[in-house]
Each structure stands twice: as C-alpha cells, then as structure tokens.
Image (cartoon, rainbow, N blue to C red; front, side, top):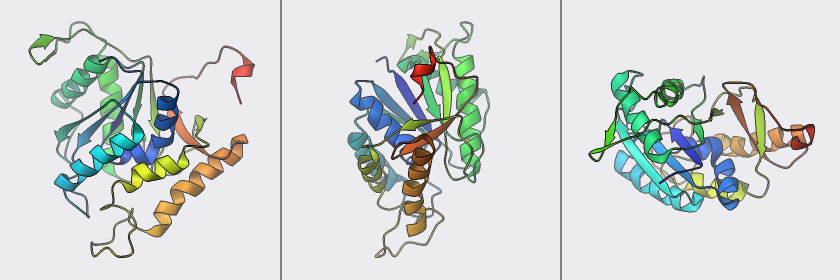
Length: 238
C-alpha cells in the first residue's frame, strides 16, 4: 500500500503529541497516512506495553490513518545501527511515502533524538538499490521519500515552518487522550510523570495557539526540516 505520508514515533503517543493536527488535516484532504511506532513504550512510568497497544489502536482510529505498525524495538535501548536501520527501510519500502515525519532532532527523552536520526538515516539508505531487503519473502524495491520533517516535542525548538491546524485541535486532543493511562487524570493512582501533569496537557494547547498567533491563525504545529524549503511562488505562503 503506497502512502502519501508515513509518521514515525519512538513511542506510541509521540506522533499524536507532535503532529496529530497535521495528520488529521492531511487525512481530511484525502491523503493516505500511516504510523510506525519504534517501541511499545514498555519503560513508561504509567500503564504497560499491553495498555499502550490498545491505546495506540484507539488513537489510530481517531486519526483516520490507514495503517499503524509497531516494530517492537527495545524502549530506551534501541540504537542507530544496521539491524535497526534495515527494519525502518523495510517499512519505507513497504509504504513508499512521499513525506516522512519523525521525532524531534533534540529533546528531553533520549529515544526521541535517537529515533529521529535512525529514521532520517534509514530514509537515505532506503533509496540505495544495492541494499537488499525482503518483506514476507518478497524482494523490495528501493524507495527514498522526497522529504523528512521533524515534529517538535518537549523542547521549544524554533520551527522552520508551521502548519495551520485550526479546526483540528479538538480531534487532536481526543487522539492524545486515547492514551488515558499516560496523561492527566486527577483520579489516577499511578505514579506522576513529566507528561501526566495538567500543565503538560494544557501546554499542548497554548503551544499550538502561540505558533498560530505568530502566523495569524488560531492553531499551528511546528516542524524542522533537513533542507531548504521551497515554494513555487510567494503566494504559497500564508
């Protein structure tokens, strides 16, 4: 199945937190979008890997993505080596996306930066014909996405561009709250974590409002790019 956009996250919920609004908007425009989670988030303070599996499936339905897979790499301990790169390459060649979205290039959680570089490197390697991969016993063709963008996560990294997600923030929040074990719940008996506070949940809204304010819209999500961005004309900018 060929996709327009393939979003990678080191953990289930990374994609929802970083770029769910953009995914929802692209899906509404008829784009085919998929998600690949690198790990099951088994080292997370709250919940369990099994609960995360259920939550990720629920979030995928809310987002309207056509595919979601989990590579079951070791949470906290996966590395950017040939073995892990080949697993990503198989996904890129399977779905042949034009655009790849992945973790922030620098962030609080060590898996985010590791996942960012791992996916970016694999996107390049996936285009090399002499790297041979098979999926379900079938030889895969080389494929390199046109562009890789990195969504913004914990740290307030200055974006290279923002996407207007006005009208999609309620659904974005719904997809995030599908991970009910992870985020703010005043009745939870689970241990506190950096993302379980009420302030963290509210910060997602005020960040998107601030990005939106800076470009004259209600809400926006920010991304960084690996190369110069180009437009056909000045009229493409809003």
